[in-house]
Amino acid sequence: MLTSLIENLKEVKDFRKSQGKRYGLWEVLLVVVLGVMSGYQGYRELGYFVKANEVILKRTFNIYSQEMPSYSTIRRVMRGVDEKDLSKIVKEWSRENSPKLKGIEGLAIDGKSLRSTVKDPGNQRQNMVIMVSLFNQEKRFII
Image 1 (cartoon, rainbow, N blue to C red):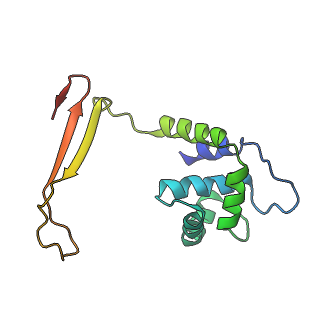
Image 2: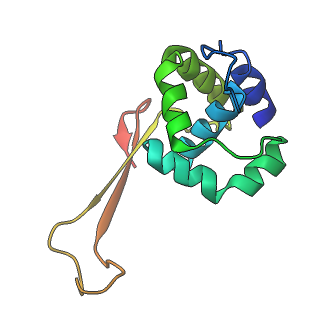
């Protein structure tokens, strides 16, 4: 599944000079995509993601570099890469690989916690009343 993403990332034009390159552009872009998908935002957080997952990233994706990209390398790459190309690749890949669920295309979901319903606010687990609504856009009614 990630193979097609990697193959497409390899097609991104490398803007860097050949001197001093330690990582393939696809390697840096892959850790950025995976980090963002895992909830990491910002260059430093992506650097933490890489450090925390270095062994599994190397093993899973056959990355043979001694080290993984640092946050400063990630920053330099992301400042120079064409974000439209990268965005297009990731969108196409996610569209191709997302599960196709029948009957859910036209559903919108919204959740709200009701004000003043928190019980025991000092407790780490917040116990409150939550209302979840589903809106069927095709039939125009709330479930």
